[in-house]
Length: 307
Image: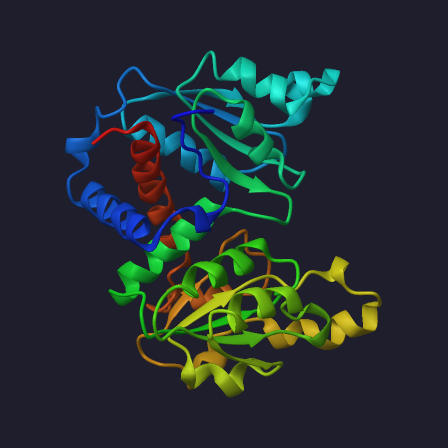
């Protein structure tokens, strides 16, 4: 709709806009009282057509922290989608009741369709295996706070690089920064898709290497981004059993890592990071969750045009 800006893909934000969002989120952390009433009288609708814990509650916490209110549903079965209503009609209706919408949907492209029929901004809170821009903003916020910069960083992505939407989005975002170096750590079966390598890494001239050996590349890494190796992605149980323990991060596997390494994970964690690692000062994944609330607060303010 005219004069309404939504966020469907992280690349819709310029580098300058991302820097601005990180700056706003940082100011919110320092001065929460100054933002406590910025969204008084505003309503966020959370349309979650598939279950979510962190993302939905993070959006709700963000809006409530800004003084706004929240309405919505947390699964398709509790909405008129269960009666066969289209996404377009649902969003047309909900935009009459709200000022901004956060939407998660199992079908890729559904939030884009929603944004074309909404009279208020739509934020993509995850669509299938496609996009999850606010998770990427969360990752970027964490990287900036941990490292103080986006440039000249070596980032290792470990685990499921084939199906992980968070991995694809963060690689796309980081490819815009000077001196980024990518280390891809995965079993052969879960390698980064060739189209991501071609369209992002090669097109942007990003230096990258591929390996199956996490410990061998550990000393090079400034950031280690862990993901889950999923049993259901393997064609046979033998391959899974052979590979799964290679990608469980334990305290022992950090023996040769940099002292200022930052360990990130989009969560939920199953067993790919040992709970013993939680006590390591380099573990940043629960800080990441906290940063997610502040960056979503900044994004809500930006899309609503509130200074």
